[in-house]
Length: 279
Image (cartoon, rainbow, N blue to C red; front, side):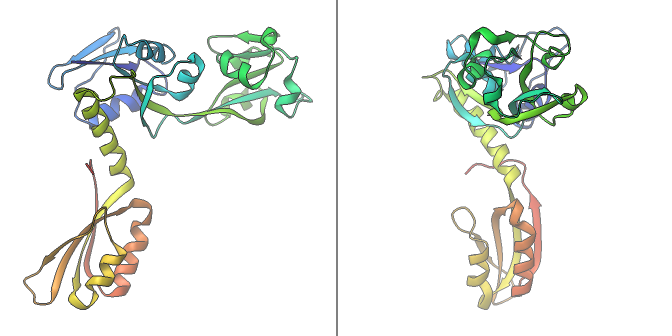
């Protein structure tokens, strides 16, 4: 049985629960539950603070965990990143009051900076004596007079604007959710299956299945438009000289491909969404 850490709250919680459910895992969290057992898939899930998950995984207390790449960087540990996920995207940015003369990160040297990510900040803006480490609600620290600037996670920037702050300089770190494993356990059967299921869901979001009928004279040209992963599936139709073709195509290119096939002379063109794939 593998032991996997999951975020217990925050922006990573719901997408992670949805992803695992879509991958066939039985995972649910009651109000005060700290763990849940999926005996069918031989997995025990533990609900932990996202910032603590890197330590549990890196130290081998748990086999794997889903958390943000920024939390891993902040802890300074090196679990194996198995899969980068499509959600939890954010940036760690510096911000100052609108009336501040600061415009670059260099302007913050010697200033009091409040943040929940002191290690990342220290690597980008030297001056440990000027860091104010907070657990949350970092944006209020300037108004309360304990900091001149902040470095915090930014998704849309709305919270900063409401607090009368503006972003300066380039992001200090760009993050997203990822599945991490303890080094040396990433090839265990349970984790290989977990990785495969997650990658299958991710790929299914990027691809679609196109099906169409093509006459023999157009078959080669049509297959060149839809080469598939290895090659398209081609089957003879009852109608002499006609073939049915099925192929995976990139979702972002799907409408253009349908237009091209129709212009070429193919018939009965169908586009189907994919739920999960294995390549």
